[in-house]
Length: 194
Image (tube, rainbow, N blue to C red):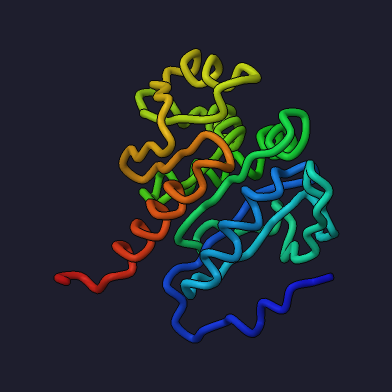
């Protein structure tokens, strides 16, 4: 069943967020941030390889894909979120998508906040964005090894903030992760001088 997100639209959203994902996403890592951001007045769009229903690795369906990854214009968004998922599912699909890599690079170049959880940092590694950055990820499947091989500094903590980058390890870190995400979005939405 499709979620009626029109009910939560506001004329002046706190921020505009884009989520990049695909089939075999981690269910909690998509649904919890999606609803949490919407609850706080963030306008959230979800992009996948095709504009169709996607399925989580635990069997939940997500029917609110708004646009394809190829259709995303990073200039229209304030925040990029990359959920995790099955290592051979959404994170791998997204990391190999050239447009997804371009989107991530555009956010880093503009200094806009980027958040990734679990296997989400795969995209950042593939886009050559982790060198010299402190970040965390799921501790298995070779993700920390990829981060360090790409010049990143892997930190095993529930949430790691390095400038515009917010990362977490797995679903149990979602409370700490979302606190930092919402703090960052609120800070960035304040008028200058406040």
